Length: 340
Image 1 (cartoon, rainbow, N blue to C red):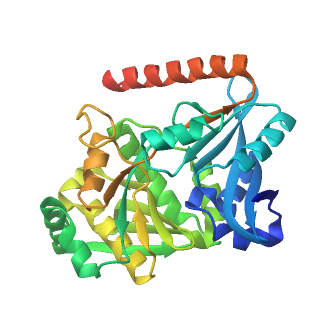
Image 2 (tube, rainbow, N blue to C red; image 1 turned 120 degrees about the vertical axis):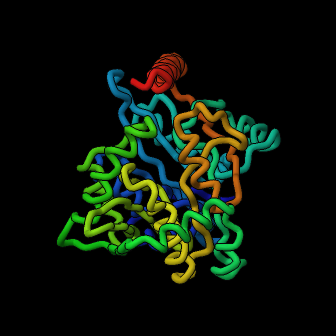
């Protein structure tokens, strides 16, 4: 029978080879610790070998002063994992633990998760994404598969007098991540979604180190677009991008994504994950519709995951939290429609 153990620091490198997403790695876990979260690492052992890993962080619910666990973008949970997580959840006095496994949405997946005693819950991470395969094609073939409008926009940008700069991690300066943040304030307002604080991005930058690269585009020495790419063992991710709307005609964001894809391809990463999208054929009134269409143009495979499933520890508090969570998102969506 498989055994679940808690992973100690000397096994972190091995653990990171057996997780399916960067937000399950120990370097993301240590980032969560630096934000004040408690973190646990669980490993599945088969014949004395580590074969799968799960990272759980614990966060406090605002105003309720109670805690939940989160295991997002993870392997499908097993009964043995659920038993181990349940023990930790009771010790930490959690209301619930949310799982968001990277298994594609299907009736079979839902049946499998509910058979483990999990309850279908709200999503924290976007359930859908685009993933571009970098392994099976040449970079020229990848470009040819982009949509006609995306290829056109990249060519437009290439004809502009843009300076693209690539900024690996530097322990001596926050300049690159600060450039992204300044541009993001305009972008998030324009698309009506929230962003993190500057302190959050400084902490992310410091903790991710060589797993984070910032791409910037400048026009006449003025930054007009920026993109943050992160990497794990063999995958690249595009979690953050921003641009100045007054330079929209330069199509700089298209060029930066293409540059990031080329960088990931040359570094021999297997895939480029666009870090979330909407469902197929989404409602144009959704706030992320423009971002979704922008990402869609790069022709990654659209994938829909099963979403959030909860291990309920305290039923009464869990139901109260879910009502509050649902009301919060309804209010936010209403404000977005009103453009407040």
